[in-house]
Image 1 (cartoon, rainbow over the protein chains, first blue to last red):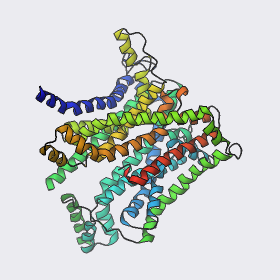
Image 2: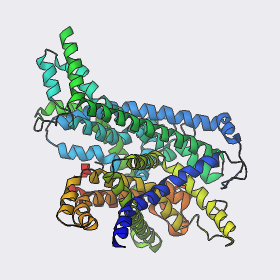
Image 3: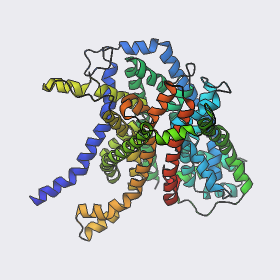
Image 4: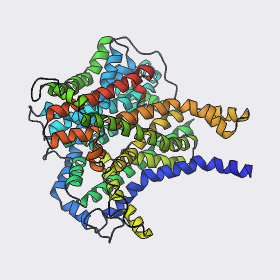
Length: 270
Length: 300
């Protein structure tokens, strides 16, 4: 009796974890059948299945435009974020300087300030410059908001970097630039790529600032979805949600596959 | 020139073969170089972030006239103080719910090294990277009057389900679901670093599995608990999407009040004052955390 109870107790954590995991994933799983539903409004289980709303998505000018805007803005802010965050990570990890701790807090500020507050600020800041409702305004806002995200990821990669590799390259006759381009950057590439990906996704998923400043012309997917949900129950939302969830699942699986591959390789090498 | 290229390639390969611990104490003291490297990001954040936040502060005391009236109203009118209290209460409930749900999940993820751990990691990663709007939309469907909950009620013959959508219940549930991955990842980050040999040592010295957990694992995981709670609580205070789509105007949160002031009343000055109070509450909480733990550990 006691032994069976101990054996059962051992499975309690796994049981609880499975229930919680189900709670996390079930709502996402429900969206997919919804997207094939014939229902005009939110209805589950669906009264019938078809792919009509997918056709509607691919024929809708406004949904496709929002999709394109999302990609343009996310890509643009990813580039600017990297330009600012990459050197900053080097400065913070490799140097000691006066005012470092204050500057570190400054770097984290966009992550600390609640999104509504930033959104209000950007609206009042960008409207005198006529940048509300433009791609440029959105890219400016999202670039700054993503700086701490990319900075944290790249700084973490840089902290784990073995500087003996650079010394070895230099002692073998490579100059500082060559060392940087051929040793430092390639070794850090995974960290930089992850930082870039995080910056991209941060912009792609960002809704609150977009709701305030994207206007009609630079409307992104999260903004358009938010407004469609509030104003009308457009069934195309389920299609967009399914496509986004599918893309994220693919991304998570691919990144896991790469990580597993890397772990395998380093295990083999050791 | 050519030899250097070959050597660089070899060094790159070495980096894969033998991951060496990073050599400590190598930071240089070249202040100017450091400032030049940090400058682009710092200048961007000051001019394109701090200045816009300054606009909010300015607007809160100048729109429509120069006065502190907005703050006085906010702190004395019961309607508004109730919104503040309700926001803190809801954030507290959501944080607690996330901790209770997230702890076992993070525990299993950190302790196991098999397919189960990978599947759980995929589940958490999937919900972490799926946007807030998408996940909030899912709850609209689930709790809606044609959703699975209503269908279950009809199937079981219980008649109409209680009003679930657009209540403080649906808003709390939605926020818990949306913020749970943050809690799990904060816990997991700390738990993964706990050496399993500590637990084995405790068990070999006679502790029962639960005793080893309570006396060894739980105390070591507390930094993760603090990180996760601070992260979820501060995110919840200013949460915009989910309370607005799932909540009710009867039990407003701060973000709903801001949205109402702007959309219905075009009261930008008052909305800015609310935003400033929200910002101040967040900064005070994170300031306390920073004193004890150091802010850059929060997103570890």
